[in-house]
Amino acid sequence: MRNRMVIGTLVLLLAFPLAAKHWDQLFYVSFASRILIYAVAASSLNLILGYGGMVSFGHAAFLGIGAYTVAILMEQGVSSAWVSWPLAVGVSALFALAIGAISLRTRGVYFIMITLAFAQMVYYLLISLRAYGGEDGLNLAERSQVGFGLSLANDLTFYYVVLALGVACLYLLRRLLNARFGQVVQAIRDNETRMEAIGFPTYRYKLICFVLAGGVAGLAGALLANQSGFVSPNLLQWTQSGTLMVMVILGGVGYLYGGALGAALFLVLEEVLSAYTLHWQLGLGLVLLAIVLYAHRGVAGLFDGRAAARRGADG
Amino acid sequence: MADAVLRVEGLLKRFGGVTATDRLNMSVVPGEIQALIGPNGAGKTTLIQQLSGALRADDGKIFFDGRDITRTSLHQRVHLGMARSYQITSIFRGSTVVHNLALAVLARNGSSLRFWRPLAREQELFDTALALADQVGLAGRENVVAGALAHGEQRQLEVGLALATRARLLLLDEPMAGLGPEESQRMITLIEKLKGTITLLLVEHDMDAVFRLADRISVLDSGRIIATGAPEVIRNDTEVKRAYLGEESAAP
Image 1 (cartoon, each protein chain N blue to C red):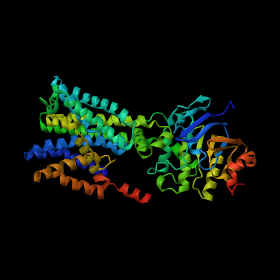
Image 2: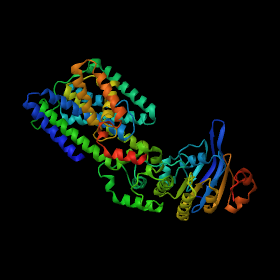
Image 3: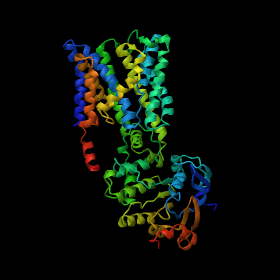
Image 4: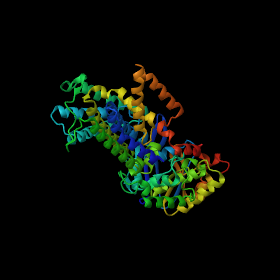
């Protein structure tokens, strides 16, 4: 049944821009691209938070670093996506390596605080970069060049590129989670002491997981810079890390599609509620409250029969 | 003893003003079951923590197979051939028995930095895990979620996880903890079957089990080994009686 739902969603996602174009509602294509990009970002956070048990409160840093990498390269005249996007992934992953190597020496609330502190450091670092707009941010002259006669300036093309990358990311995530690496990481989340006692260098596995998540967030950042045509330090503000975390909690911590579902729910709610009131966050807060109280496994958890069965077995 | 598999020299551990391990010396002979007994608070758990690598000693040295492992980490010691079980059951409660064991087999089965092939398809791994389940008496329970097992079965799985590392020396921290008579009996049989295939250092409160299983018994009191010898020697040692056995009316 799950497979059927996934295929159905995919068909809808493929057909959606054509319908939007037919009824002349291209705004929604751009909006959908934004949702897909945040779906990738939230999924990368879900990898470390949900599957790795690492509650990182600085994930927006990697999103922002990816976005800035693309923007700065474009400022320097490098606009090929084939150069700047992989570099965005690489630079974000490098930052994740440095930040993770230090942060992962701590546990629990200290880990939350230290990741937050590192993200704030990157935030202020970018504010101090006067040459690249400082606090005001930086406009992108154009969207990245992909070649093959395709132009990302076309919102439909851009949407399909984002969709392809998003699907690829989720597929790779699924492979990884079922393979040795993912199984080890999840077991470390469940019982780190025991994993060490059966011979796993747990720190190394957690760090690699953290770096992978940082890299994927960097890709999302590269796409986001393209989508909005603008980067600013606000992308890395700590509230952005909070937003990503809320997305994951809404969608389902530790569920493959949790990040994607959460991103969609969050952004749609924001869009709909903000049309009625400036205080849309109040409505969002109520939804979040309801989820945490009545469906603490998130939206994805509602579809999960196994979780209910397991709860029965446990109790 | 030059051919000791484990040798401890002058091991010292202090917590504030309390000396939990007091310049302790001991050695474990390969192939034997050596039991470590002692009254509550004697420092048994602290010692096991240091031997396994979970806790750093303040001073002294630990040798495994003649090699200084004092500064070697917990997971590296496992790869050298020394593993432990826990007094308080530490298993993967949300996973099935066979998955628990497969994880432990995985640790000594090449790199786990593999990102593509599903673990569930690694048949050899699960075959080994099934054989282990059988060995620790959990045949027929392989697909039960570990958290749903009876306490005794969880203790068997606990030992199974340590066994799966294929260590040459196992530190078993009170494997009988909390077991009823029948479950204890099953655990004793399980350990008896390991005799000769593997060296065991057995920390245990159950005197019945200790005197049935051990080739040699060391008595720990106030962070020191006060006596080591064959079970019948220990039984008649006056200092041991005073320190420990005397307070146990059930002692044989």
